[in-house]
Image (cartoon, rainbow, N blue to C red; front, top):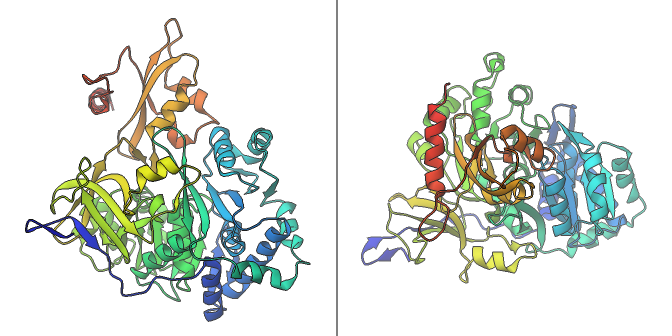
Length: 547
């Protein structure tokens, strides 16, 4: 595959020095707990709670038995809707031990998105906090629950519900949990993560024990993780960055998970690094920018740091330099991937130079194949040429939940996942992501798909048509902009009106910051909207505004 007509082609396979882990998440965790019983496993800085591996294993078993006693069977869907907290991590491993499929729900979701995910996945039990920031989860759950016949029980983690769930399994026969664990296989589905769909509705990527256990292991293996490492995790657990690269990255190596705060808070993250002597720190570039710019940094001792992961968006050179010089993260690594690939497909090495860590997303991950192909023909392009990034291996998802058509669109007959990202593979095998085939917007590390917002705004009675694009933004990388055609005779709608309509129904980062009212959209001769032209026009208009 590598050579064609004598020219090097854009294909590479990752190393296979370390064998894939052929076990379930529960079995792997118990193996770690047996090897490192007294090592700190989990620390929640805001409450001062901490568990050794032996203690955390016992706590996980309490909850796992409670789930079985509640009638949760293998393959049942259990949802979790909460910010980062110790209970989130405990639920992650407890559901894995009983073979339930954990449906991870973005804490920023509102009623429209929550109802869709719970209904689509057929969630039987939902575990949630009562509130977070401006979100009243209790009232939102109460609002959507009548629409959800599959939802048999809701457990609020910050109420007596949680203790009741723990105690429910007290009289369960001791061998029942062990029997359940022994019935599971590494290829069983264990997680559904919803990604925004380009056709409007989110898609549920189904991931197995093998998918995420191995990806978590290899991500931290490449930054030399082991017993004694302590990872500060300010990135959200609902996403692979937190629960796979973070939690599983730690527990597969006997390292410590440190939760600095429920949501990202740069001051709390810096305080956690100092207090817990963290050796590693995760974040998207905007998080690192916030920490580097925070006044507390001058008074915090972050000398314990040596490594970490930056992902979610390209890293500016100056930010990488400051992470190395100011945060002491000399071995910081860049990772690239997507939810559908567990998530990481490429990663830089701990000793790569600055150029590789800022100009590329690394090279093929262990046991993973990558290639860059012509999007039209599917043939390999030469090294240095642009094409679609594809990946194959253990990390590719099982498929989209209840959506065979979209699964076939994403994964071809040879098992290659087509990412939709445009990439270049260099002569050294390192890859650069140069854009997106479709029009996904990345705002502050969050993937936002315009079509989903367009579908929602179409429900406004005065909107005739709408097109959503991303425009450059110095803080978030990109911001959301909506071009709107109003219905004849309707009142004009401005950005405040759009925000008011979307409030409580869409996550805050999906709500357009900019709104432009138009009579027509720029179109191609074949009738397709010219979003490239729209972007260029918005950049011109925004640049012309007084600063």
